[in-house]
Image 1 (spheres, rainbow, N blue to C red):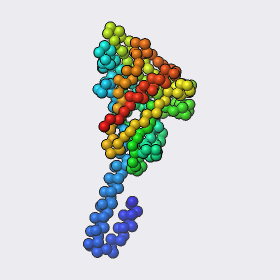
Image 2: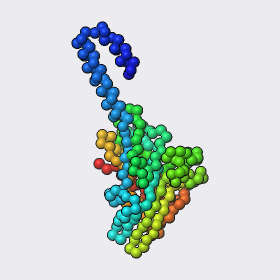
Image 3: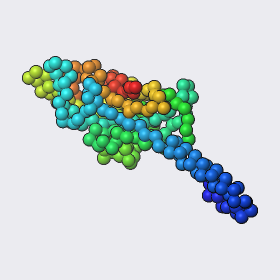
Amino acid sequence: MASFFIIESKLLRYLKPEMIAKFFKYTLVLVLFFIIEKQDCDAQTIEMKILIGGHPLCLDSNFNLNQTDSVQITSFKFYISGIEFWNNDSLMFIEKDSYHLIDMSKPASFHIPLDMAFKFPYNQIKFNLGIDSTTSTSGAMSGALDPLNGMYWTWQSGYINSKMEGVFFSKSVRKSFEFHLGGYQNPFNAIKVVSLKVNSLAIQPIQIDLLYFFKEIDLNKQNHLMQPSIEAVLLSGYLSNCFAIKY
């Protein structure tokens, strides 16, 4: 782009005033085109909204599940990885080194910026809820995958794909619950693929409504899970069904 202006500026000495005016007019249009095009292409962000029953989740606050039961979530984290944009059956974009830790205690993590080199049509977003087996076996890493985030077991068990902790209240009963869901080896591979239809002209936040998760389990009986298992695979499926984009 810079070389273009250097070359064209040398030609100005040979142009008539009215031609110079036209030159600057068309140059301005060209510059504005590049600015607008870059803003449209590079500025893409996926936003997450975590809810319970349509209400924004607040840590350490009570939320009613029904007329008798309520929960208080004290911690909620999960991994999003392998983000892809599709247009029907065509893969249009895949994020490189795509690992994001969404932490309820860190609102900044709800926004995932993506670096897209050009504009393209798309009508579907796909991503993993969890960390793939290759990454899990390659050893602990840095950034979102740093063990200091409290989301890594060992190389044998891999990463915790999602972690939810809190308290369950039912009439006079009070029980704590802990769900650390993960595992990458069959039959305990707990990673789930989430696929969502999207309107690229009116992108909406991805909503994660945990009420759908709690409707599938009985917290009186099922309240403690801390290792890879068939149960962890099942609960991971319940959690993946909480994701939606609504227009």
